[in-house]
Image (cartoon, rainbow, N blue to C red; front, side):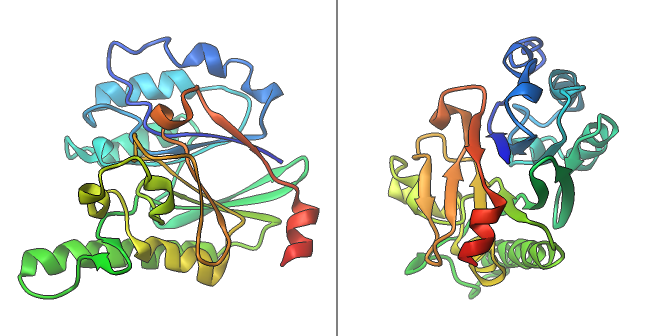
Length: 243
């Protein structure tokens, strides 16, 4: 099972034709394309139309989560609807199943949010604004948990924009780690189980990491992978034997 993934492509109105050439023959290379958020620069519908044009009719199913840039202009829902009209499964607390040649793939997705990681994280205490910040991440993690629980597929992938572990943030200033992800996103990935977790957002991080429970995590932000997409090959029979 071949999974192509990329995040943080940050397409603008002047980006027409930049990504498409690298995706034209994706169907011969991958079985599915997963997009880890920040598809646009400023979260406008005009930018989203460019995204839709670049990924339409690729010959493989596409699933995506939105990122913080896609929320910037307060048009996240219209953007999601536009992409859905193009055939993209835009996920936010839900999951999608793809029946692929080598087995079934389930993708559970949320944007996620920040808060930091064990020992160095925000707490749900004090001002209402701080509690709102942490509660937003808590709600996102719970939505991811429910989406993962809904899946019964050969392979399960957790797709987020924000990072679920600090391991893929190496290279980013430690001071901004709380704004790049949260350990709360990792908890359902380990509790419910996933075979792979994909995220973006951390432009100066590193590609590979692992959860405390042993789930492989990959940062597919385009500035990190330095190509149109990364390709990951999963073998359902081998994964089943490990469970």
